[in-house]
View 1 (cartoon, each protein chain N blue to C red):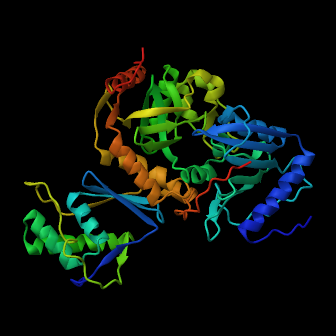
View 2 (view 1 turned 180 degrees about the vertical axis):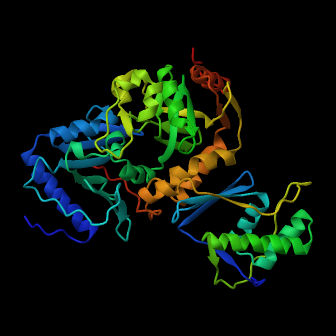
View 3 (view 1 turned 135 degrees about the horizontal axis):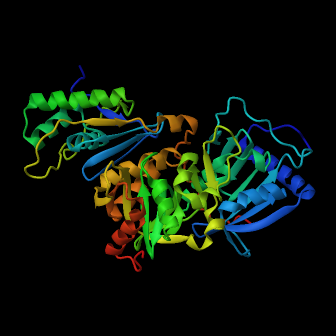
Length: 148
Length: 351
């Protein structure tokens, strides 16, 4: 059972993610697998990026979707465990408190709640194994030199 | 000259340059220019056969006074007395891309050669063990792994997508393996649409919109797909290795007037093979487009990662996406795509 004050952080630079149209696309550059997160799952992902604890994220989901605290805590915990199992996140050692605005979710009025769902895609794994990429490179100084 | 191979990429780069200079004194060396997304690149290749092979899939341009990137390569089998470093043990089939700690030198180690990019000096130097040693990707997309890094530094993002054009409207075809993007690209090419890519292209984005760029004037076709394209069969070049199950068609040689260097992107199509008679085009979300485009674009090339994903997200947010639900009516598909692009503001519909 995860502690309520547990924080997670994204496993950078191996994991890249983008939320678009309210849903997240996550790519694991270390394994060749990629994922999508549904609406509520993406909202929780953004809270993870902001440094919310499990309790804060559960409370934000409960409030945004008007569901019971028990359901929110169960569903958010389950997602956090899935994200850890997939090596997309690690437990954070940052124990600093969050800002008061970090733990809220914007939801369209009348949106129905669906439990956070992480969908995994493995179709790239074989290609990835044959030709693994180099991780993101650091930017160099401004470079106006010509190649001649 | 020393035969010791240094351990640091910076020193390895210098050693390779020494070898290139030595090889260029022994072998006929061609000095030509090509254009990649508008950037002039000088290709100096020592070894006539290697030079001839490498330049087939690039957009040539007239020589100018300066270039933005210099490439110096030699054919090691044609100059056996010139120092060549040992091939690292345990290399996978398509090699490995690594960098030094600062990220300045990018090393593309292959079973048949070695290339190093100096991101600061804008120079690539290296060798291949002859034209007959080149793998399919090296013939169809020369230098693509190092170019993806160098162009990426300049805001030009590689994408794993087909790109065709109807008039002045670029159509980006996105999807994983087997989705139908390569086949759709080739159908469009043979129907008279403009051609930029069947699998790897690049794009830039600014306030005026998204522009797709042709990097390589080639197509890579599965051998069993060639039956669908009789016109391409006679032009198809066999691979050098038995395990490679595709052929190369140098589109720039076969249909030079079809090549488009760059086009504004008006729409993203996500092909999907459906078991029904008629092809349909229906709206898709930006998220679906990103899911179709991002994984292979980010994971198949070096140096991408979060920056590449951010650029791709920006692309799909700016360009409307649609599902291209492919039916059995193959001959109708290019016209349907052309009509779709016309509705989105193309200058000239496909006839």
